[in-house]
Image 1 (cartoon, one colour):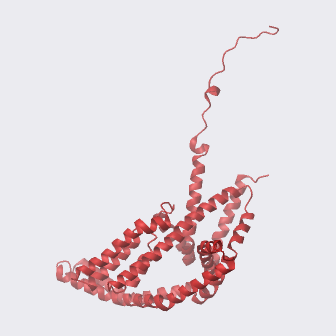
Image 2 (tube, helix red, strand yellow; image 1 turned 45 degrees about the vertical axis):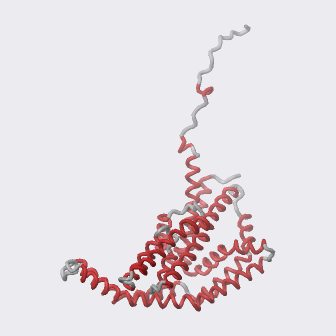
Image 3 (cartoon, rainbow, N blue to C red; image 1 turned 60 degrees about the vertical axis):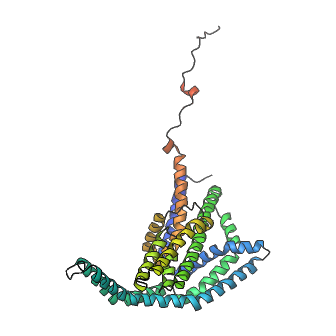
Length: 370
């Protein structure tokens, strides 16, 4: 006998509340396991493809692990130290850049830079703030990052969790499927498949786009000789998942730095601007259609809202689970809207068929015995 709808709704609400409570209470404790699960989810298609090529599951995971280890070693030795060094230099150079901006405005627009001018006061305040707090902000960010993400724990636990989950991924999915309530199993499978398609399109596809564009911006800006090109490329690539925002923020930062570095050399300034124009064309015409697809179902505003809410409620862990939860809630919302539009609450009472609405035809009276 099926449970009443009200009781089922109560059970699902309790399950959702327990999930949120676990995120709230455990917080950073489950961070390595969330990261390990995310890595396993991202690499599962690669392992499946290697299996189709004839590898065993264990051998496929071993190959993936060795390639990932090689990429990590290269990143640690070559990319990460340079990125940290350029970020520190950018923070230290920012007051000088603002001083040059103030001097340039003073020489070109002296009436705006009068001692009593509001613009002069604002630029002075910004410059003093950066000079006084630039290093402090950088140290706070780094110390907070190290406090939230214990580097040693991540390096040890995340790969181990990811490898174990990747080896047993198919068995775990099958086991979860066995535990689904039989009455709702087909609907849950359909919703799970739609959530998986959305996540695969967005996280795998958009993550690849971010990586490609970030690498392109960093290499191209380095080739034209722009200082801090690696930082600009990393920033632009990191926020490329929000349409146009990555190119606008990265382009504004790069062109601003180019104006200070190449002032008067308009060819190089134009080359920096052209790099981001070409990046947008490559993203819109090649990368996003091929890797992400035309219909992901995650609006940029919805993503920003999810990141803000989950980040505020659960901190860094919340920001990690914001995109998966946003995708899941989007799929569930579309399912609820579809059910609502199919319901009598939306359509109203069903109209009576014409034969039922018409009065019965008149018949001659029948007398007993006739």
